[in-house]
Length: 48
Image (cartoon, rainbow, N blue to C red; front, side, top):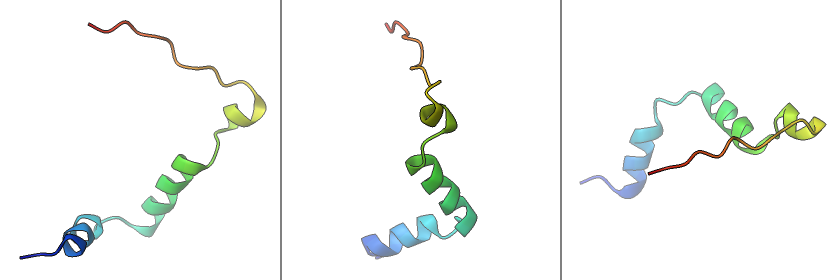
Protein backbone atom coordinates (compact mmCIF):
# COMPACT_ATOMS: atom_id res chain seq x y z
CA UNK A 1 0.00 0.00 0.00
CA UNK A 2 1.38 3.40 -1.02
CA UNK A 3 1.87 6.10 1.56
CA UNK A 4 0.39 9.58 1.17
CA UNK A 5 3.80 10.98 0.18
CA UNK A 6 4.28 8.28 -2.47
CA UNK A 7 0.84 9.00 -3.96
CA UNK A 8 1.60 12.72 -4.11
CA UNK A 9 4.95 12.01 -5.79
CA UNK A 10 3.29 9.74 -8.34
CA UNK A 11 0.72 12.41 -9.19
CA UNK A 12 3.31 15.14 -9.71
CA UNK A 13 6.01 13.06 -11.40
CA UNK A 14 4.94 14.11 -14.90
CA UNK A 15 5.11 17.87 -14.25
CA UNK A 16 8.18 19.53 -15.77
CA UNK A 17 10.26 22.14 -14.00
CA UNK A 18 9.13 24.75 -16.54
CA UNK A 19 5.46 23.97 -15.80
CA UNK A 20 6.09 24.38 -12.08
CA UNK A 21 7.74 27.76 -12.67
CA UNK A 22 4.84 28.90 -14.86
CA UNK A 23 2.28 27.83 -12.25
CA UNK A 24 4.18 29.65 -9.51
CA UNK A 25 4.45 32.78 -11.63
CA UNK A 26 0.74 32.72 -12.43
CA UNK A 27 -0.12 32.27 -8.78
CA UNK A 28 2.20 34.83 -7.19
CA UNK A 29 3.32 37.36 -9.79
CA UNK A 30 0.93 40.27 -10.41
CA UNK A 31 -0.29 40.72 -13.96
CA UNK A 32 0.60 43.90 -15.88
CA UNK A 33 -2.99 45.14 -15.53
CA UNK A 34 -2.70 45.05 -11.74
CA UNK A 35 0.59 46.91 -11.80
CA UNK A 36 -0.44 49.69 -14.19
CA UNK A 37 -3.90 50.26 -12.71
CA UNK A 38 -6.00 49.13 -15.70
CA UNK A 39 -7.37 45.95 -14.07
CA UNK A 40 -11.13 45.78 -13.65
CA UNK A 41 -13.08 43.06 -11.87
CA UNK A 42 -14.96 40.52 -14.00
CA UNK A 43 -18.62 41.15 -14.79
CA UNK A 44 -21.17 39.90 -12.28
CA UNK A 45 -23.26 36.98 -13.51
CA UNK A 46 -26.59 35.92 -12.04
CA UNK A 47 -26.75 32.24 -11.14
CA UNK A 48 -29.72 30.01 -10.71
